Length: 318
Image (tube, rainbow, N blue to C red; front, top):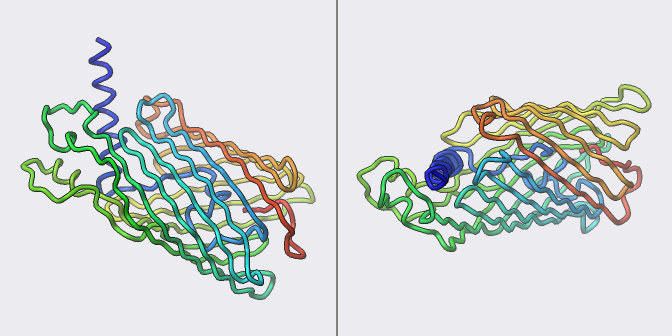
C-alpha cells in the first residue's frame, strides 16, 4: 500500500512539477517578495540601494506536496565608479521534483541621473546555468518510457539577460528578461509518443517581466505602496502579481498580494536597524493545488552597509 502511494506521488510530481516547467510554459521561479528582491529579475536594479546591499531569500512552495519547488537566491550589488556604474551578482538554486538548477550571474548597470532625483538605469546580466535531472529515479505509468530513463548529470549552458528601470525615492518601473537565451535539455530524438517528444525537446525559454510601484504618504507615520509584476513567456498565459503594502513608522511593512488564478497571500518585513531587515510571506493557493498543499512560505534576510549618497533616506521603499 505504501509502495502504491509513493508511486502515485512520484507520478504526480512528474506530471505537475516537472512537465509544465519542461514544456513551453513558465519555468523561472516566482517570488512573492519580488519588490524587495528585484535584482533576481532585473539587472538594472543594481546600485539602487546606493550602497552595498546583500539579500538572501528562501522560498518553499506548496508545502506538504512531495517534490514541490524549493528556491534559494543570494544577491549582492553596489554602485561603483562615480555612482554612475553599478555591479552585482546573483546566485540561484531551484529544485522541483527530480530537477535541480543553479544559476550564477553577474549584473552590471549604467545609471543616468535625471531631474527630480530620478535615475534611468540600463542593466545586463550574464553567466551560466547548471541543470541536473534525475529522471531515471521516477516511476512512470508506462514502463521503459524513454523520457524517464535518461538522467542529466551536468548540463552547463551560458545565459544572458538585460533590463531597463526608471526609479526615484518613491517609484520604480522596469522591464527585463533575466534569461534571454533559449536552451535544450536533451538531444533531439524521434519518439512515437508526442508527449515524450515534447519532453525531450523542452528547455529554457525567455521570460519577460514588467514591474512597477509607487509610495504614497497617508500621514506622518503611514505610507502605502502598491506594486505589480507582469510575467510573460512563450507558450503560457500572461500572468501578473498585485500587492498592497503599508509601511508603519518607517520600520514595519505589512501587505497582501494576489497572483492571477494562482494564489493570495500576506507579507511582512521588519527593519531591525537601518542596515538589517527580515521578511516573511505566505501564499495560499486558489488553484487546484489548495487540496494538495498547505501553501507556500518565503523567508528573506537583508543587510546593507557603507555610506549612502547624500539625501538618501532609510529604509528603502523597494
